[in-house]
Amino acid sequence: MREKKYFIGITILAIVVVLNLPLSMSMRIKAGSRDNIAAPFQNVMSLLLNKGREVILFLGKAREAVGENERMLEELAVLRERIRSLEAIERENEDLRDLFNFSSRSECKLILCKVITRGDISGWWQTITLNKGTDSGIARNMAVITTEGLIGRTMDVSRRTCDVLLISDPSCKVACRISRMGAVGIVRGTGISVKGDTRLEMLSSLGRWRMEYISMDEEMRIHDKVVTSGFGGVYPEGLLVGYVIKKDIDQSGLYQSAEIVPAAEMRTLRYVFVVVK
Amino acid sequence: MMTWLVMVLILIGSAVMQTVLPAFAFLGQAKFPVLLGVVLYYALNWNMTTMLIAAFFAGFLYDVLSPVPLGYSALCFCAIGWIAASFRNLILIDSVVTPVFFGAVAGVGFTLGLYVLLAKDGLVVYPAGWVVLKAVGTGILGMICTPVIFHLAWGFDRIVGNVDVKESIDGVE
Image (cartoon, rainbow over all chains, first blue to last red; front, top):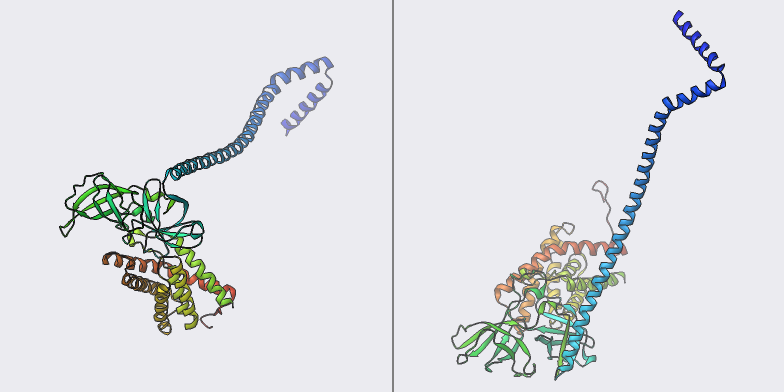
């Protein structure tokens, strides 16, 4: 209790002394205290505040940068998509130019058609549907080709569309000859290969074609070119069908057979020509 | 009136769906028998007249969208619809097993029936094994898609008020 009173007295005395100090001394003490006691804390505090501000500013900028990055990524994606689109247009342009050149070189009248669907609703036939029909001069049983070779013949024709039976269908038979020596035979499809590369896409699982009833006297060679013979009246003479890749003897032993690889790329049919006789 | 309108919409939608859905090469080029599912829906849920009209138009659409001669598919659809409808009083229509079973059996039956008609005219040339594979494939796909078609068609009919919904509380309707 005595100590407490003693400290209170000391404190009051100190206050009285400080209050009564001369002005110059008071200023000196204030300056000295500010420099030696407050300044270090102020510096630390200032440093911390500055760092904090910098961090906050950095975070703000980082958020902006993230937004900017997202925006630029979007822009990049749009530009890439545009490039892809332009590349597709360029490819289509080249394809159409090739088709136009092919059409103008050809001796037959050709009608350029676009493939609008692949396969029929039943799955019994291998067909494609084209975007032109009787209005464009297409009739039943006309040969259908690409720039690479024969692909089939027209079946059902309506005013604005027509179905094409592909050679790969077993019910489609084409009278052909081997270009090198004129041996004739019948080419037909072997249907869908159950073990095809793609199990869902009809045209990706096509089996190889077979040429049958070739005379035993003829000597076939691998890579011989097979073209239409013109017999039968449906297909004009000389249309490229494919190439011999394997030869064997028919089961009856009376004829030769050959495995044919199609000249036309059947998987990517987009534009085809109908041959008008 | 709404019944016929709904039927037309379902048939057209199903025909488009069946056309665009891919065929399965490893199932003998089988496609989802969507139209057949619609015929079964009408066979098992509606009266004989409605079913026959649905089957006829389903067959008509099927033939128009394929090289099948007109009338072949209608005949098959009507026959299958007739047979399915004759079992209507013997089955639990609310059970999911019903469309699965009928979808499978009808898929096989329709494929074989149509093949007989087409082969008779020499329109398709396939070995027997391939035809069996296709028939089984159509059956499998029928098992998958028929319950979905039943559900969708029933929902459509219910929305437009063609069918009454039975509500039950604690099993009491």
